[in-house]
Length: 199
Length: 199
DNA sequence: TCCCATCTTGAACGATCGTTCAAGTGGAGG
DNA sequence: CCTCCACTTGAACGATCGTTCAAGATGGGA
Image 1 (cartoon, helix red, strand yellow):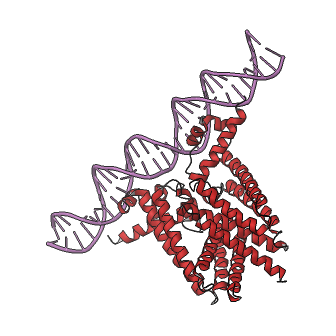
Image 2 (cartoon, helix red, strand yellow):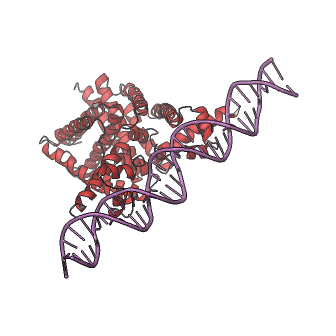
Image 3 (cartoon, chains in turn red, blue, orange, green):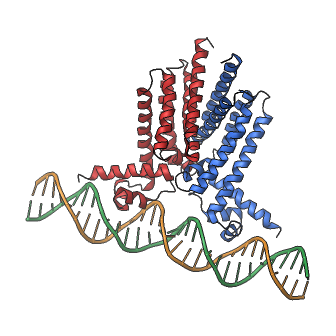
C-alpha cells in the first residue's frame, strides 16, 4: 500500500509528459501504463473515469504546476518586472532547447485537440488558461497600473508565449521565443512610458 | 474521368477541415473518405504515400491558402499598416466565432502533434511558418524600416495570432484575439514612434 | 466497337484503441 | 494467524486504426 502514492503519481507525470509530446489522441493508455511501470488496470483503479478522468487531472495539475513554475521564474528574475518578463522568455527558450524541443506548454496540444470535440476537457483547459491570465494580470500591474491595460498586457504575454512555443517546436529553434521575448519587452516598456508620459 | 479533379480536391479540403478541428491523430481516413463522399481506396489512389502524403499536401496547400487569405485581409484593410494589423485580429475574431470556434490556424494543431513524433511532417509545418514570417516581415517593413526590427515585429504578430487562437478556441471567446490585436497595435505604434523619434 | 488507363469500391488484414473484469498479491489491523 | 481490502496483473472485448488489394465501373482514343 506504500506504493499507492508512487504509482498514481507515476501515471500522472508520465501522462503529462506523453500528452505534451505526442498529443492526447496520439497517446494510448497502454503506453502510459508501460512507461509508468504498471498495467492499464491500475490506471482504471485510480481513475475510474478512464482516459477522460486521467486527462482532466493532468490538465488541472499540469496547469497548476506550470503556472507555479512561470511565477517562480518571474519572481527569481530581475527586479524590474519588464526585464523579468524578457528574462522568462529567454529561460523558456533554453528550457525548450534543453528538452530537444519536446516539453513546452503542458496543455496547449490537448487544448487544440479537444476544443471542438470534447466539451468537459475543453472547459478544463479554459479554466487553466483563465487562471494563468489572472496571475499574469496581477504581475503586469507592476508595469501598468490600469487594470484593463494590465490585463491586455497579460494576454499579449501569454499568447506570445503559446504561439512562440508552437513555432519553436515546429522549427526546432529558439528564435521564435527570443524574438517574442524582445517584442514583449518593447511592448511592456512602451506601456510603461505611455503611462509615465500621461498617455 | 471528369470527377478526378473534384474527388482529389474534396479529399484535401475535407482533410484540411477535419485536421483543423479534430487534430491529426484524431482524424481517421475512414472519416475523411466518408465526408468526401468517396472510399478509402480513392485516397490511396491519389495519395500513394497514404495518410502521411495526404497530410503533407494539406499542410503545404492549407498553409499557402491561409497565407494568401491573411495577405488579402491586410491588403483590403485600412491603408495605415498598423491599423491594418489591428483590423486583421478583429477579423480573425469574427471569423473564428462565426465557425463556432472551430476553424482557426489550419496547421497549428498538426504542428504540435507531429513536432516530436514525425520528422517529415514537422519540417513541412516549419516551412509554412517560415514562409508566413517572410511575408509578414515584408509587410512590417511598412511600419519599421529596420529589417531586424521588422522581423521581430512579424514574429510578435504571428506568435500572438497563434497563441490567441489557442486561448480563443479553448475559452470559446473572442477576447484573446481582441486583446492580442490591441497589443499588436500598441507594439507596432511604439516601434513606429521609436523610429520617428530616432530611437 | 473494343481497349485500356484511370478511377472507384469495399472487403479484409493485423495492430492498436479504450474499456472491462476475473483472479491474484500483499501488508496492515483484529 | 487470519481477514480484509487496496492494489496489481494481464487476458479479452468490440471498435477503429492505416493499409492493401482484387474486382468493377467509366469514358475517351484507335
